[in-house]
Image (cartoon, rainbow, N blue to C red):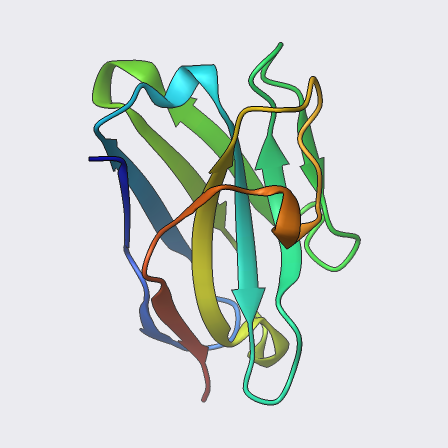
Length: 125
């Protein structure tokens, strides 16, 4: 059974850091493009970052460029999202998702096939 499990969320203060993990079971993550998405209350789900299956190229939303870093650890079958200099507007439920159709990972939630359950990130003083 294909499963993605996110972890690492929590309550932090502005300027703090968190590292989210996306662990896979039932399939090998390095064969998939992996995206991180987030959804704040009352807002649509938006793409945050993704890493492609083809060459591990990465993409970031403009709002997180320079602050967030996506990476893979194939030995652990896990993708990470390192989030630094967190801001209150980063508060959301963060989801990871997997897709296998594209050479470069898309930022469109509908193009992803498998999703995790989400992890809450709250940035507040």
